[in-house]
Length: 115
Length: 114
Image (cartoon, rainbow over all chains, first blue to last red; front, side, top):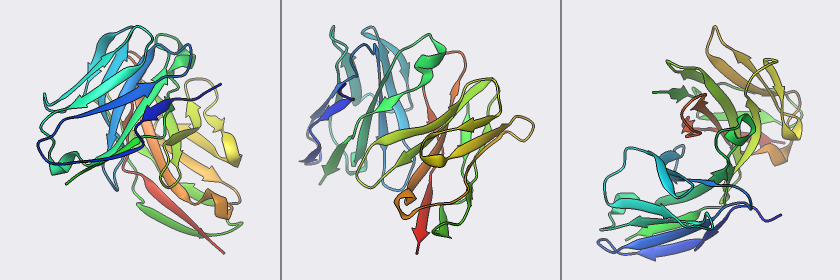
């Protein structure tokens, strides 16, 4: 079975631009979460979506937004990019509501560099 | 709210030696506990988890961890490390109720030397 996939793998943007990152969860998983991992730190929670509804939001500015589609894939959008947005963006999929679903499976990430 | 503390940012160890990576957490509610490993330029891979039951949890690649509720710790151990274990290790917690949002520690870089 395919794992969590993310696209693109790398991208470079300029300050002030907008970026869209994409994630496809493992087949059968209905929950997608997004994390930001700045170099040298642990991942920080950004959003969680389940059945197309936002179920959680971390301490990130409104420039960050996300959505989940009927096929459970997800997009993370970041507007007005800042240098500090440079990071590895990780997507994780899992179920919700069952003990076993508390496992989350991470994709390889998208490395965003803002210049 | 929860927090996770990984006191050791780097742990050097010789191949075939034992290793312990320390993790302490703070939470006002019951939590699940996890250890993830991250190899260079890759995502996170789940090593092991504690959900309930036995406090000694065995994971992949010969790793194990012990949940100690009184000390709010979840230290990761391996009796004999290999060069291929060189990676970043993250301890994480999530609330038992309220979804599966993970709160991570800052990570411990395990460097295995010959």
